[in-house]
Image (cartoon, rainbow, N blue to C red; front, side, top):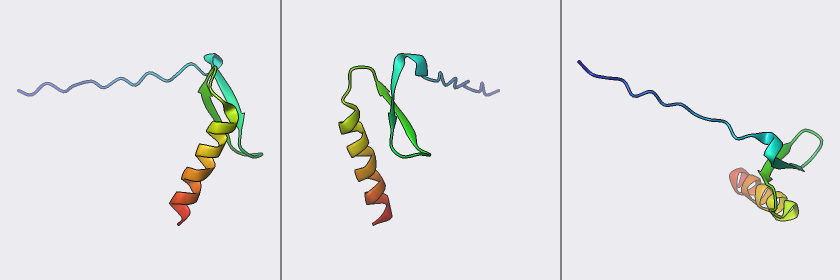
Length: 52
């Protein structure tokens, strides 16, 4: 009667991305060529906004 839509999620290839170390336990990945310091700053700002 009803057809289900199959949602397939394709994970990004981490080998093609740049690793940014936030602290000893936290790492994020950004596209190669982006500023890692800017990415770290935006991550920490977003974390602070969640806590407030």
